[in-house]
Image (cartoon, rainbow, N blue to C red):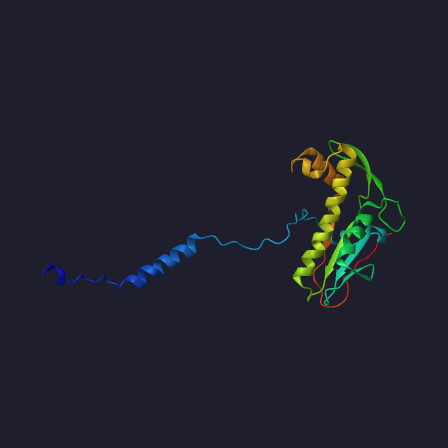
Length: 201
């Protein structure tokens, strides 16, 4: 009878081999997403550049340290993460032209003209070997916010528009970055003590 006919079973002897081949195929052809972190454009290499960068006037250098206890130190004082942005903004712009902050000088922004800004300021970010990545990321974020807010304020003074009103590659954005160029120097993490920095006269 037709109802009693048995359905032949599938031959599964080569199933494991086929699965293994497919697994290898997908591993080879699939691209994995990776953590990108914070993007920084590295400067062009120059002979003895490291030694020259280490010789910085004290007034032009702001040292931000994050120790092994994840405490943020600026000028040897422990501060809160919420204070860092405003401290960095004052250091970068030196609005009151203080003697203990970077000196203002005339600077030519290509396509815009001559401006007066702190051309030689450097923010040195130093971390300990045990510093947590989370606090390091927050410090980087606050320093970036300081630059972005200064640029936005300058754009509003010049054009009565905010940075969000311009395209990312607009000339005005380039001018703002020329007015306040990002100068963050990241020292190699150290287990003990601060980085050995020399000050030039």
